Image 1 (cartoon, rainbow, N blue to C red):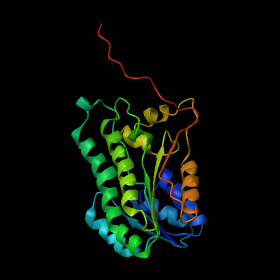
Image 2 (cartoon, rainbow, N blue to C red):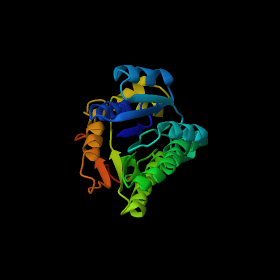
Image 3 (cartoon, helix red, strand yellow):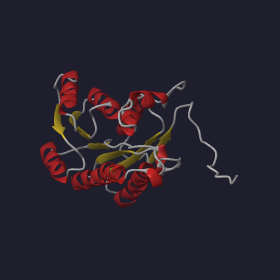
Image 4 (spheres, rainbow, N blue to C red):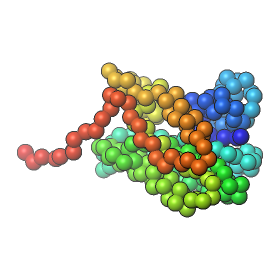
Length: 246
């Protein structure tokens, strides 16, 4: 069995790679940082693992990775992220377009490239990493939340089209996950601001998401988990945002 994982250079992607490797999967790990990929290959002792530097916004690079990977049983679309937390009217358009290119277009192109072989074989699992932000809006979430809403609906519509093909699709929607670079990237590598997001609370860990992936891929082939939404116990839902006139 072979799994292709995007964004495997840190956090959730790295944890998923380690977990699936423990299950005996051959891995194709991808990410933008070659040195991080090399460290993960070393961690896995180079056994049943190949690495490819990949920016998922590069269609040509995706085609090359897919060609090199060959038959893939599990696709984990993990690459993605958020940029900024500014209100829509103050946000940088370049940040919006980068999130769309990574969270939506890259995921879509890679899925489209691998889907035919899965349908032809009559088996395969596509796991997309969404977010609770795709269902629950919050100030500053604007385009990031919109991209994750796409991931949610794309996953559900894939499942609708793939009924009877043997191909399974799951959208995993985590809430706050610590020990990742998510907030560091969101806040332009402001380490103090990124760390403050998780002050005085216990966030989910990358291993929690990896354990969930492990559960999904070990289910009987007739079982499809459509959507999984999970949060840390310390996270909840806020009140409506009401602008009151003075």
